[in-house]
Image 1: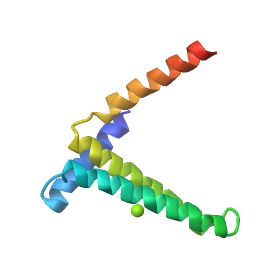
Image 2: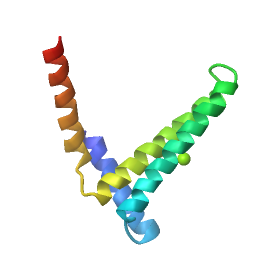
Image 3: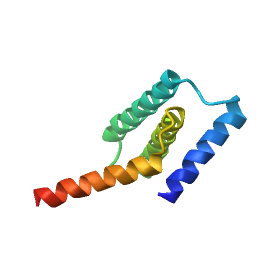
Image 4: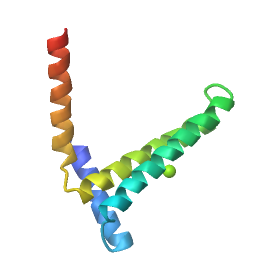
Length: 101
Ligand SMILES: [Mg+2]
């Protein structure tokens, strides 16, 4: 989870350097949705391509990374500590699976 904290710090610093500050909450959410749309587009195009096409796999990787960065941005804007949030989510899932099994 340390890497998540480092990523969150880097994203906040990058926004500050590049744009003079973090976006507003609505704008950050729109970035997430925009990037999700690009993942959908990538998957739609990949459906028509040859199986295991490297070109499309690379494009999908890049778009998924963009989704992650946009989500980290939204977390920063909303003052969410993603490392803690992910640790809590992991515990919740583990507990759910432990009681289900
Ligand atoms: Mg993108």
